[in-house]
Amino acid sequence: MGTKKVVDADQLDGAMTATADAIRMKSGTQAKILWEPEQGFMSAINAIPSGGGSMPSVSPKEVNFYDYDGTCLYSYTVDEAAALEEMPPLPEHDGLICQGWNWPLYKIAAMGRAVNVGAMYITDDGKTRVYITLHEGRTSPLLGCCPNGTVTVDWGDGTEPDVLTGTSTSTVQWTPNHEYAAPGDYVITLTVDGKMGFYGSSTTNQYSGILRHSSVANTVNRVYQSAVQKVEIGSGVTSIGSYAFYNCYSLASITIPGGVTSIGNTAFRGCYSLASITIPDGVTSIGSSTFYFCYSLASITIPDGVTSIGNYAFSDCYSLASITIPGGVTSIGNNAFYNCYSLASITIPDGVTSIGSSTFYSCYGVRYYDFTRHIAVPTLSATSAFSGIPADCEIRVPAALAEEWKAATNWPAYADKIVGV
Image (cartoon, rainbow, N blue to C red; front, side):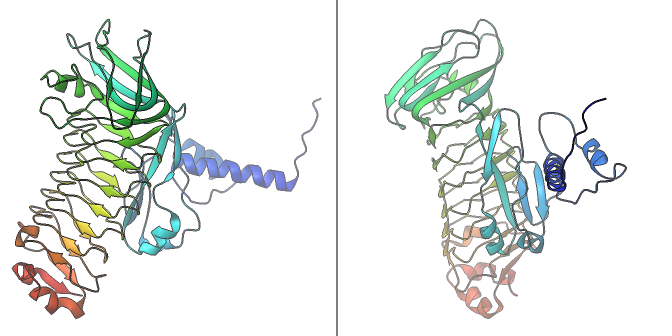
């Protein structure tokens, strides 16, 4: 007869609570779980989808917590979010460590309006992983990055790695062309000793350095840039340079850790397949054309520290349905949301004092622009700011400022849309 196990009440309560928390995290719920087997732990466990550590999606409300792939994990009304005493559990994925959410709880509560929050990740081994698919006759790429120290490039096919050395996170170094024995799927891993930045060029047929055929202009470069499917950024990476992933047409997902503090102009331009992205909380500005022509981008979470949105930042993001502009943003650049056809509504925080020309040009889906928190009329650079405004769209402003708003420079073009509330 075996020895009986004795557990005191505190131990049992602690174990049950830990188990319940784990179930809630895996199942994407914060509901209480009863002990009774027929309606409690066992049924909750059986309801968890299997595979990969992913969590089920929920329908967005006003305050939404997104995973890196655009899955809405938790959603609340503004009032429900204000009542939260702690952030919802962090998601889990094989090979990744979730660093936290890119908004703190107290700032979510202080916003008092709709906000999108995103999960930040770093790789569990600290290495940056680049997932690629190579096709017949296109199996000799090279790779460029900007090391301040050394970067070891493992090509993922069992061959000897290449080592890049440098002294600046903005000066590119190139590997030799690597000859793969066969087409197929590979994972390139970059091990950084020191710091590293990503590189890209504005020169036609150069663009992203993450994978190319040549370090100079060459039409075949585009083929290799299109081979990049997914990127998971590890430790040591501090910047994503201008044009870093420009024209990586097949890039479907990327995880960016909190250590990245700058994202350059045009960094993700032409990433047609990118569906979602979480900008880490150390980034303070979104540069010009950063997400220009990201047709599939439906979900983006911007941290509260961002203070400016550059020209063409989200231009031609056809699938972008909602976006939170943080309260610290003071200016929105020219053409920033040009041709964002799916944008349904947008709140402009009271810190915004200037709106560029053609900022919301052809945003045919917007039902209302909310300026109701403003205490002064923002400067409108040109009458083109809302060109193509839908017939039933309202520009909602404080009732006390409505007449002043309609008379301010360039605003009379939209006087019939301005509604005091």
